[in-house]
Amino acid sequence: MSRATPQRSLILTEDMKRLVSEQRLGFVATVCPDGTPSLSPKGTTAVWDDEHLVFADIRSPGTVENLRANNVVEVNVVDPIVRKGYRFKGEATVLTEGALFEQILASYENGAAPVQDARTRICSLVLVKVERALPLDSPAYDLGRTEEAVTAQWWSHHARLACRPPGTAAGYHGAGRSLPE
Image 1 (cartoon, rainbow, N blue to C red):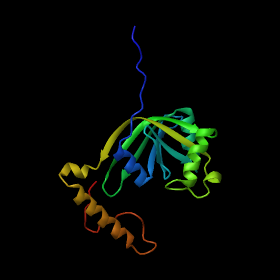
Image 2: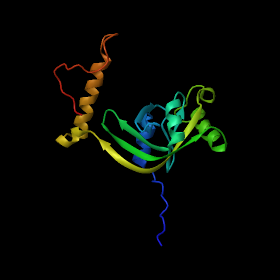
Image 3: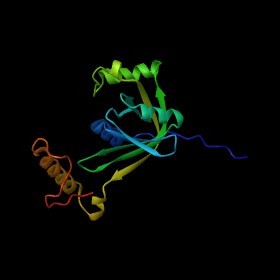
Image 4: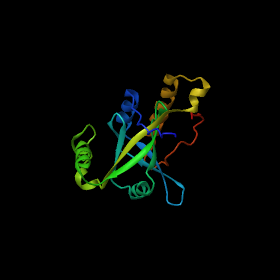
């Protein structure tokens, strides 16, 4: 007789917590009812505790609907300058009331990165039990580039974008320089 091993949550490392706290923008992947993927940016991504991430449903009806039907989720958080981050896989719980909901909502009202009018704007909260986490990094590192070189190149890129005249189309259109992936 075999015994099923219960799935254990992953304990988030200090580096994972640092990255999520600094970036706050997570890209949340869910599964639509027809089986196709859905990807949605969440600017409220935060560490809840050593085993959970959380994000607020401010304008996320599709994400929440998908998670209610199928609670598997992946959240990617990447530093866009260093081009490194993590992918967090796990199971999501949608919270709309109760003590835990109130506790998390209070953190969005008064925490390190408060959400303006959180109580009226947040429809629900999504708590993600992280079961697996893997590092992400740019293919630029495969070329032997150092973190300092990749960082310098992306700061330069963003400085050029910041100097665009108003009304200029977004995006990078060459200028004769290639960028790392």
